[in-house]
Amino acid sequence: MKWALIAWREIRWEVFFDRSSLLRTGIFVVIPLLFVITNRGLGPGPGGDLRIVALAIQSVLFPALSGVALIASTFVAEKENGTLVPLLAAPIRDRDIVLGKLVGMLVPVMAACCFTLAAAYVLAGYRYGFERVTRVLTPELVYAFIVLALLFVITAGSVTMIVAARVRSSRAAQQIAGLIIALSAALFLGLGFAATQIGQGWALVAVGIGLVVFDAAALEVAQRVWQRGEVLARV
Amino acid sequence: MRGVTRRFGRFAALDDVSFDVRPGEIVALLGPNGAGKTTASRIIAGILAPTSGEALVDGVSVREQPTRVRARCGFVTDTPSLYERMPLRDYLAFFGRLYDVRSPVARAAELAEQLGLTAVVRQKLGTFSRGMRQKVAIARALVHDPPVLLLDEPASALDPEMAQTLRSFIVSLRARERSILLTTHDLDEAQRISDRVVVLYKGRVLRTGATSEIRATGRPTFVVSFTGDTSRARDALRGTGVTPEPASGENGYSALRFATDDPAATNAAVLRALIGAGVDVVTLTAEERSLEDAYLQIVRGATT
Image (tube, each protein chain N blue to C red):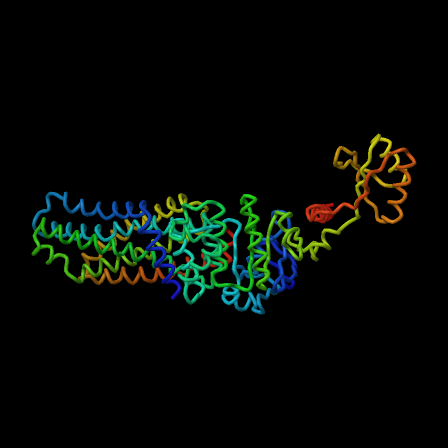
């Protein structure tokens, strides 16, 4: 359970005691809520319902993007500052270090995702009527969006970890990872949106399964590039 | 270490390296940059696997049980590398938990007291001075009271007073039967506290032995101090077959240095020659060689 220690340290000291990371996450939480508040011209009918779904997807995926910057800075900063070496010198498995850091990023980011989705739900309820929002955003769909966000964060985290292992500075890691994640976010957004429109959500399940397979492969690669020998050869 | 080789691609950072560190002993690992010192330390610490060969720490193989090896080693890196946002007590307690220490918070307080950091135990590490940070790195390495301690440039960038305190602390650990491998470029520090020396060069062991043995490497040198004409003294020395070199004389006397393989015969001849040349000899003393002189001679011998 040493991964839990690492995760707890990350959450407590590197997320909640880092003003810049809190500010970044806060911005990614506020932006989708602003979209909900300022959205005009939401007409009745299927077109308007579709826009409510899009706002919900935005609300859950936007905060997930903050996780990219978080994990890029976490991993590369450890390399840059040399703090990774004492960690590698401790009696912990490589897998625990990677898992601990990933979970340390996942928990606060997913908390932000859930909070933003809940806030967007309530705001949309006040603005467009609770009856309509409850009808469009069914519990199954909300749950599916949260799972989609989780899978996306794992994908983003894995890709960022792979990038972070290869570059020397956290700035470079954030730039490259940001580019990859922006592209994948656009793809996921489109996929998720399209999936909700086809086959009563079965396509959403298919997207989820596809993401799980991709995540498993990406995590395996991430774990390999963060093995002790590999990392120390580059530190 | 027994016949340890470590390759990074085609480059051999270590090539068939063997040496040992016994309990209650401080061994200095010396060598120029790129000699393989840090790689050797990392292999012993169980954080890097050897390509071939074997390293045993407290009887445990780094190849077969690296996690158990890591639990037996304390590793101080050349830079303190601390988590800046954490207070000292939380930082040491965190590493204590990673090393399965029973009462990590109590152990953190104990170490802070030993290293004179009790007053700052709640302060964030980012506010600490260079010397304090180095002390924290040492406390981190000692948090699980390991039998083996690997110190990579522990006193680098410390002021003399702090370096002296650190040296005393390291020597106190030797008294507690800890095996200490000190990787350093500070040959004065190595000379003061190490029992034995291992000289690495381009991944190979050039020389290993007791510090006193290493210092005795090469031809004995002597310094003769005198009053009178230096050129006459130099000619007299040349006449005995030695090559005089300028040396710094004390109390205003002139001085010359020479090396010889046969002091018994040469020194008597030198004295006779100087007196014969009208030079008033004040002292003729054997020069104590520093570890630095011996080390430079060993390394130069390898490069030529």
